[in-house]
Length: 227
Image 1 (cartoon, rainbow, N blue to C red):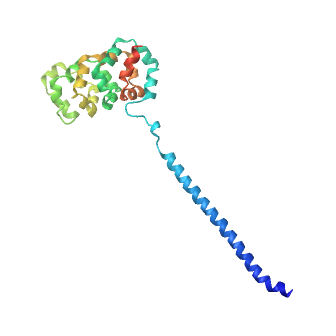
Image 2: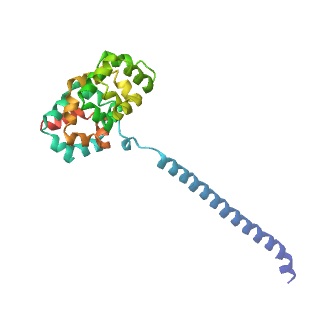
Image 3: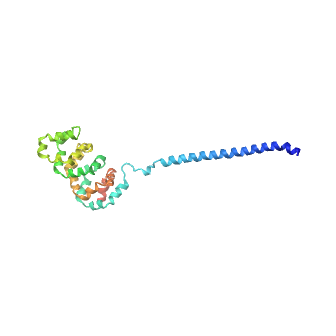
């Protein structure tokens, strides 16, 4: 009994030290694991937030939009339409179709209405209109045009149309009206002839058509028509 009492306290102290060591070991291992998992979690979040280059449409390509147009009933019905074929073959149209401003204008119903008018083409492609564009805004342009006797005689009806005035309010149209390719396209009447075809007119209102044009697909469409 005396011997047992003698070793009781050392044994208890030793057991306590062993228990404390075990506790420290498992606690340290748990924290290390949490930190590791936290780091992995952060890395996963970062990886998921990255944009894969394969998911981004590369410049000059819009396969989904182009394919949608090529397979559309509108495009198929236009395949043998002479006006549509000539428009796609026009270098000015192909050049302009890569410009966001022109593509946006092409889907504007005000523009559709105006392009079908002969007096609109005559006025917009005239030197008089070129001088009018030097004015700072739509109101000044209209004042300039309204004060000209030639405009009053030949284009009085045109300049009072809401569609014409709406176009003048858009900076994009005013910029294009000073573009030689755009003026050439108007003078050729290829665009106006194509827009007389209801199917083509409807096609220009589709966002996929605009996206496919911006991707440079006019040439691809032309190649598809030859099949």
